[in-house]
Image (cartoon, rainbow, N blue to C red; front, side, top):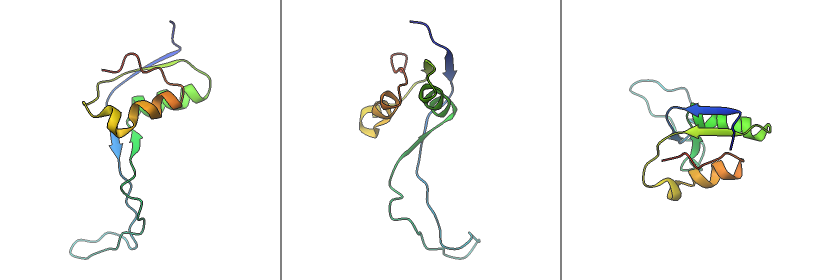
Length: 89
């Protein structure tokens, strides 16, 4: 199969935490979002491949992931976005 774009780099699983007040050393700030355990998939190869696939391009990320890729939902996220996952190790 031919691909329009090949991406490579690192994968990240981010958790976004919103705080009520600006962070300041020595002070406490309350967390505003209770859904901060939600994983947001990221890293350049993931973001670029996902968005290009949504635009109709055949994107192939060359990345390595840990043994927990099924548990984290990363593979389902990529496949759901139309990203080819055959090269992910």
